[in-house]
Length: 250
Image (cartoon, rainbow, N blue to C red; front, top):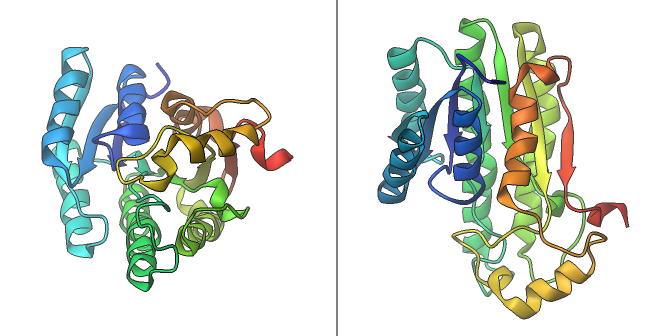
């Protein structure tokens, strides 16, 4: 098992990529803490992982609130004595609002997608340093690097911030044994917060531009996160891995 005896905290883990990552980590031997603001879905995800023989528990976490982060990290340390892996997965879609120039939505995107990751790195890296090191994996997006019709301006900006924080944090924390990498998905199934990108017509146009001519699956992203979380990537830090079916290679 690739994560045997490791303790992993995953944000936004009640559904989608976060839940797929939690299930993958549990199968690979990790004790998984699923964090989210949707307590019902999060608890249900934990119960399914436990029913399959995995070790998991649920934790309520608002990634935009620093007090909530401090409580979450302290809770993990008090319960398990260490934190080995943090997957900063929580985020909101760039098509949540129909008004693609909404200032209020720009602020919300930056708050959840960028500040949430910043707080995770800040408190997660400190906890890992105290226990000898670990791996932080941030979820970025191809939107950090390319323009996309129908996507709010703030989404690409928020994910570009994640990309930049990943490289900077990798340098800041390397001497403490903490690796920081990012996974940048392309077209995937709609997020819980997706509206415009859940439209079949919009999706068909986007997928037509993907060389592999299909959307990705959440487990394919989870497998990429697993690589960074495991010791197989022990000499890899500051890297962004694209999981996009070749879209950005066109």
